[in-house]
Length: 379
Image 1 (cartoon, rainbow, N blue to C red):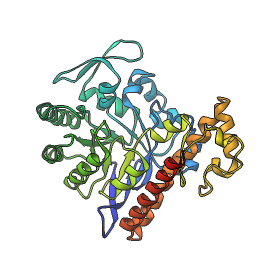
Image 2: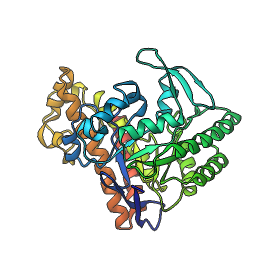
Image 3: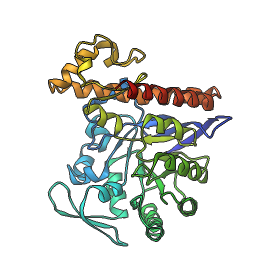
Image 4: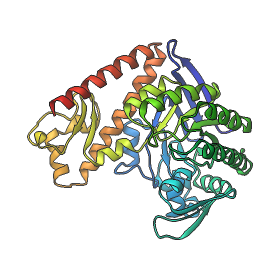
């Protein structure tokens, strides 16, 4: 097996875990946030930028790369690592979520999903077997089983039918996966906000036996407190000796809360997407850098931040770049937001190591909520 996971420490007053994930392209210290490189690129950020801000592993999207430029081309260029000149670990999703959220005229059957590309309308087929073959061609360190992600408001009966199909698909994924290769396959547990379905599906997926496990189907429209409650109930049903990945989540508050619930790995487009829309995460709250109040502000974006953006440029300059639609704005904003998320996870790891995660996370969440309330009150 090309993956090993060592559980180094657990927090005495929460479910937080400090681990070490060893993969073919390097070691990942957990808990960890994974920047999203949808099309083999973290938007506006080069690989050397990612290294400087401490990114240990990034995520790429099977659906997008399957459609363009194609997994065969990427495989000829050395897989994702060679193609994008990134020598650290990569995780690829299965393409399932994008099929359901982006593709047009999709039709789900036992075989898989027939859909029309959002790029040109051409008809495509994605099955569990094809998803695994594509991901292995991409050469990712971690690949994901092909699953169905039911809409949050689906009826219980649909969830039950979907889970049974996803379990059958998971077995087909494992049967296709080359367990002797360099990619490690994670199973995905679905079930919406139904605790009994989450438990049942966790048992079914574990019975297939994967190197790691993910919780899917969150952050798809449900209320945040409901998501936290569901994760708190679902995470304990995952094996303690294998990595736990919460897919597509989330905000800094989500990360701090869900680390305390026993999650090891996170990904989300939020830091780079909001950066491109001028919303920047700081120790003082969220700054909308396009606001006129920053036009003549000489202060760094976040005086408490050690990233290149904050150490080098003023709020006035960052506001100017965004107002002038200069491309550098995207890079500097994205660098900062990603640094904020990665540094937050580094502090979480330290708190777990020192046995104080419960107290640290409580204080951080309370301070964060206070800062955001103050910002809202001041307009």
